[in-house]
Image 1 (tube, rainbow, N blue to C red):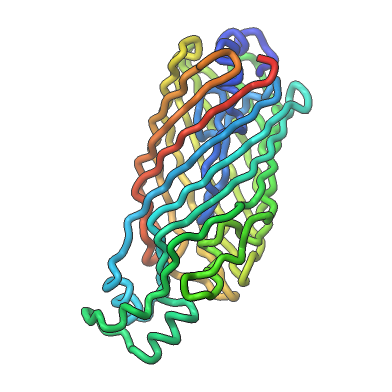
Image 2 (image 1 turned 60 degrees about the vertical axis):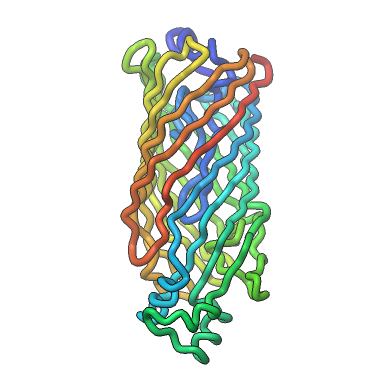
Length: 338
């Protein structure tokens, strides 16, 4: 995985299990990037370059605080266009491979599913509310809310590359570059038959470019650090919707690469600008999310590992948003040739 004796001594015992360099991820919906684990992390990218081909599987489950139907009607009475969903599940397959000792590439495919979606401002809702004006505390126009039980389908494809430009044995730095290709589903419909807003489609219809810098190093022989700073710029996607550009910082501290069990704790911060739809800035969008994510990796063998983590979430979002309450992730990695 690394081009120096010290780092190899510390990391090779977990081989592909810690070769999660680009095999783990988090759903990129709502402005968040797909990410990959570094030397001992689960979410932080890190700068430890792959030495072998790696296959990864992952499930991310995100759960949200939801508004009551009456709250959605009350928002409409105040002229607020609000949508929400109760859960989001994303499933990933990643294939990563080295290009040379200082560069690797990973391709990630995903399948997404949003559940419990409601909107008070799509065409169906607007037409119904025009005939049944919303009033605060009055449930008579609840029927005008536009529901969607599920919105499943293929997500967009991410291609990520890293180039390590500094490596002195104790510290490594790499540039991170990538593109999210709009291969996902963008034609799912609400239960009333109209196209769902792009924010709750499995795909985006948008092209996203991301770039940044990543770091991997050791505090002690047993304690490793992975970190990254990544910026993403989005083009206009389906239905003239453009997610706000975002900047993300991750740092992970892990302990005991020689052991079968590797505990890790991560801090993830994502700041996103407001979305634009139909050339109009969406005031109920944008903001900053903070994730504190303890996790654990178990090395099954030199070639396989499994991992899990749980994220405590604090949101400081713009306007009216149904906040993410928590997230948990499960994953498996296999290294060819370990």
